[in-house]
Length: 149
Image (cartoon, rainbow, N blue to C red; front, side, top):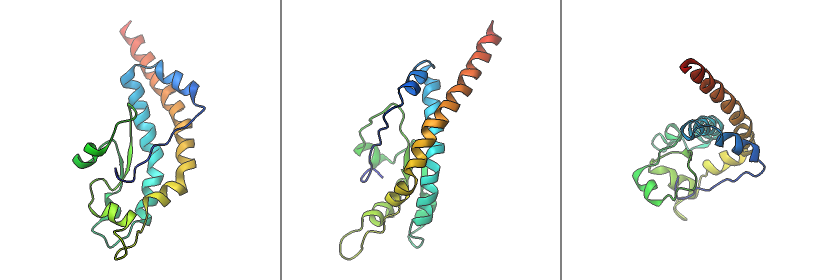
């Protein structure tokens, strides 16, 4: 959700960043996309479980993706070469449920609690799985290079 979005920064990953820079840029981006998609899935699962069930298939619309709706794209300022989004996409009830509409409809948050419950796991997964994905990618690239010789 663009309205309630936030950025997470992680310090202490200099070696990981250095290893990513040793890969071709397209491969490094693919590594990060795969890692972030996997790391975001627990948040999406929890959000689906917490989302109100009587609001037009809101829970089913929650996903982990690189895509934003047209409206969200206009509001979003890209902050990183690789970004992943978790939420109900362009589902119209998403922000209304998460933030409420005032006294007539109180907030029923599902994304923030899902993040709060899973953030440590997400950050650990990113740190650990990125290394695994870098190694797999480097091995694949080395095999391709050996075949060309």
